[in-house]
Amino acid sequence: MLKAKSISESATILSEVMMPVHANHYGSVHGGTILRLVDEAAFVAATKHARKNVVMASMDHIVFKHPVEIGDILTIKARLCYAGRSSMDVEVEIETEKLKKGKTLHVGSAYLTMVALDEKGEPTEVPKLLLKTKLDRAKSKDALDRRKERLRHGKYFI
Image (cartoon, rainbow, N blue to C red):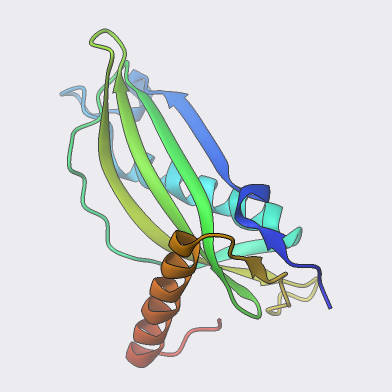
C-alpha cells in the first residue's frame, strides 16, 4: 500500500511573463496559451503526488473573467483536491498581475482529472490524499461529486 500524502506535498505554482509570442495582434494572450499552462501546472502537481507518468483525462469548463495581456505575469496555482485509485482531481487557479499597476486579478479556475499510468500505459494506483482541514474535506467531496457526474455522462479510463 502506498503512503498517503498531504496536499502541500504536491502543490505547485507556475509563473511566466506573457510575451508577444503568447498573444494575438491586439496584445491579448491566447486562451490556448493559458490552457497549456493550466495543463502543465496540473501535470506537475499530479506527478509530484503520484511520482508516476500522468495524463489529463478531463478538464471542467473554464471562464476567463479578465484579459491577460503582454507584459502581465500569469500565475497558475495547482493543488490536488481528490485522489482515487488511479485518478487525481487537481484544482487550478489562474491569476494575472498587471506589473505596472501593481494589481492582481483572478482570471479563472478549473478542475482537471489526471490519471497515473504504469510502464505499459495502464492506469495505476496513486497514494491517498491526507485531508487535514474541513475545507480540504469539502473540496474532496465536491471533486468526488464532479467525478460521479462525469462518469454518468460517458465512460472514461479513470
